[in-house]
Image (cartoon, rainbow, N blue to C red; front, side):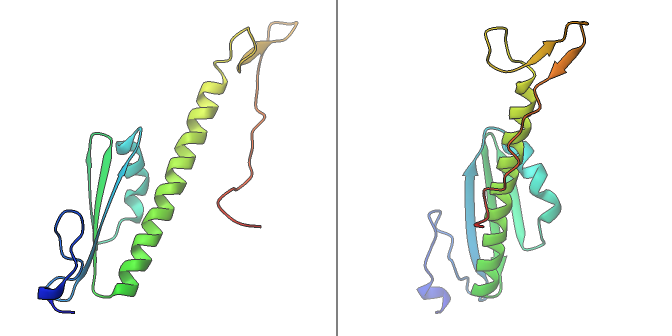
Length: 130
């Protein structure tokens, strides 16, 4: 495929440039995009350009081969999913201490006034088939 035959993504960026580089654009939205992007930053490579705008993360990946591009995109998407789940769980645990007296979730006092915290957590890994 030559640059003239290149298939473009939604933004009109060719999937294969005239220099033979393969390109992918991944755009995702998150409740806390800055936090997700920061969690992924240590794994970013020189082939990736990441920017955050409001609740959106834009990641452009350029690799010289289709297989390399596929591998990098796959790794990035898996890392996004893991970051989202970790942030989700952290928020669940943060709010677990806020249970009200009507029974939702929270801290309770024992007879001597000491506070106990509900720490029952689901630690199953749900991203892997077993």
